[in-house]
Figure 1: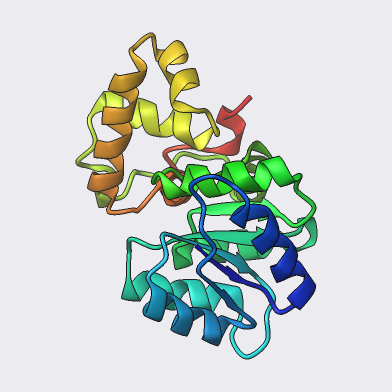
Figure 2: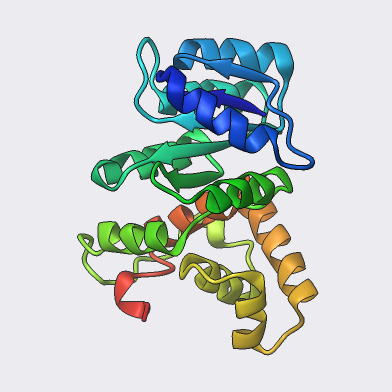
Length: 217
């Protein structure tokens, strides 16, 4: 993996922690977004830990360029509570996960493993802020756009559950189906929507009007 942050001590701390974990190799570091793009193109890591605010090129634009160059690279965006607007831009840019800078070491390690295996890391706190963000939109169901037309009724049900921030196991319990069946449905939903992961699927669910904040608990 690659660590991109403009603070040397932060990079060193993350590198020491993650490099000590079994199965995680820190192969490169970057001081700004532009360097991050260059390092990723040179080393082709599976995961990039990317700070949002960096000089030369910010983390969001760097993520966009990386996603355009190699869709297999997963980016975890380092964020803080006071930059919620960046979360939505980062999802659209191709980020697969979000992590607060004051997260516990164990949470950081878990985040890297989750994203590395192809899952999106959309924490409940981030999902909640996304719901609050879309609460500014009138709670009226708009006609689903053409992008949702190919989804079956069950796939729409699964997408609604994903948008609420539930895990596959929780969705399985809610819909009374097997967890493996949920995984299959989620995979099909992502394919039909043309998105990389759950994080981007959540945005589609809200922006399409399929899900509205008032429909959530």
